[in-house]
Length: 438
Ligand SMILES: Nc1ncnc2c1ncn2[C@@H]1O[C@H](COP(=O)(O)OP(=O)(O)OP(=O)(O)O)[C@@H](O)[C@H]1O
Ligand SMILES: [Mg+2]
Image (cartoon, rainbow, N blue to C red; front, side, top):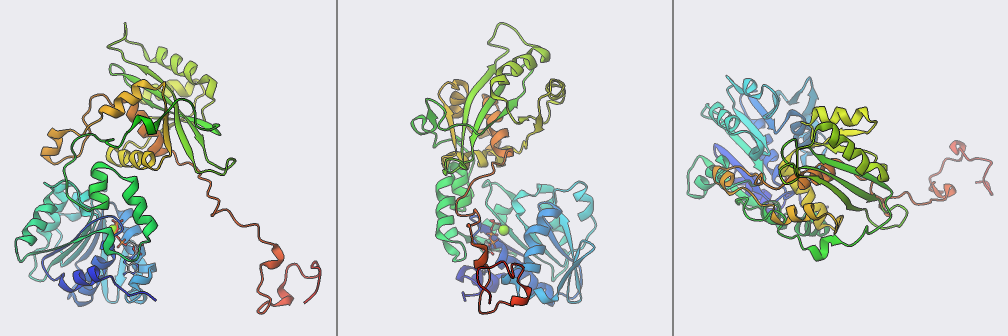
């Protein structure tokens, strides 16, 4: 039996009595558990039902908060008094409304509300306008806000609240969490987060720091490690990614995948070949039909399963479909996609065959946009990023069905499934088929 809370969580729960109570820091460091606990304690004492749980979207609020309340051991104290129906959470005589900050029409949902209590999950992902709106809704003397978040850029609105808390402003309480503060996550996971992230992702997710997105994005990229002379394994299948450009460069990458199932290794992916057409550097601009001809010819030897494509390239996508190619709209979330790519590369899952010179050049020169950073946005410099986008589309969207020898069902002897001491022989489906009877 472990302690119900880590010391850092207890510190938060004890001191979270201000207008805004903010838990910020590394991923999986126990922020949500203690913030929700403090919030639910306040719900218990709240005189009315003007109580809200807000998530990045309604679905994430349901997944991260409502389900945690209804299912987890950490919330066992509240669980028997909670029920969920009609998109509302009931706790004893209180009704808690769940809202998504980024859902369509979100502003309308918040307008005109009076909030006595609000819990905001992953608050740094909300638009600034919604953060302002929520802040202005906490208008009653007993109103309180609780929020958990991973750090973002240092000019973020919530970071200014944290700074005020540190300067002694009585309206704000903030506590910084690191992965080392939680005993509930195993060391192996902590090491994986430490080793699989780099640059801002390492600083924000592992160290929990509010830092600017600046400098090289793939600062860990060493061609000696990530560039290989030939495919590192036999491909079980191939997939492709396309970043479409009508006047900007057009890029198509083919990736070989080995799930490890046959070789009993971990998964491996590698960029096998690239097709890159820079309309400005080449003698002329190609039409969509010519480009689709090129892609068809380029992909022919590989028999690719799917082509992950920029969702905005609608007409090119239909050109490919008419030729019998399977296209899939790629997940185009830039920051999340870069994070996935970084972590997959650092974990050794993605290699690049040396012939893909444009991709290698782009990776080496891919940097954060310093002007956007100054304005408070995390964006890569939109310059030489066409092959990288094609790679990001594939790696961020395609889920490899990984072979894990430890997760495979062990070859259990069917006769060994039952505990002989407690076994009711009359219900034995194999009765009479066994070598001996009970
Ligand atoms: N007091 C606790 N007792 C048992 N398990 C806990 C406790 N606190 C946290 N955990 C476990 O640790 C994990 C991370 O906790 P939590 O979700 O609160 O972290 P977080 O900092 O909000 O993470 P993220 O940054 O991913 O949102 C969860 O799986 C949770 O079950
Ligand atoms: Mg959380």
